[in-house]
Length: 170
Image: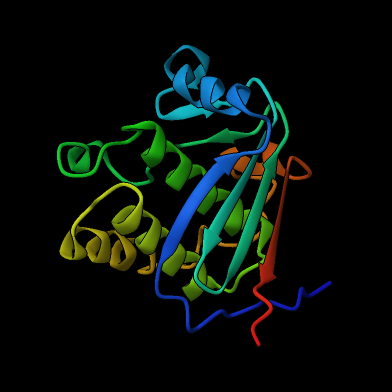
């Protein structure tokens, strides 16, 4: 079934994020190195519920225990410029982006745009650096959508839910 993808084109910034489950989500992301299944594959050993507020709406991201993600996608050579895991804020950015790709509550371009704004506004990346990350993840749509049975991330099917709630204006 084809999902009705939302394109919040007027989004200009990410205002904040919070863990709904208080500290357990933050702690789960803090110990990713100890839950690594293999090189650059991190197992979330607890469910995480994030709420990300933007200037045009709110994004809810929920993952179940057992969700596996790769941190910042791409080759290790990029790690010196943009870390594979990085700070808690960066880990939230990578998790949010992967979950949006699988959950598809936003279309492809807004999924990449919210990553850029999160990196710029929350992680304090500069305009150029956050834009380069958006350009890199936007170069291929192969990662976007439900994983195929042959892909490492197929185990995530059924372990992620995302929902975009537009702001009520006026």
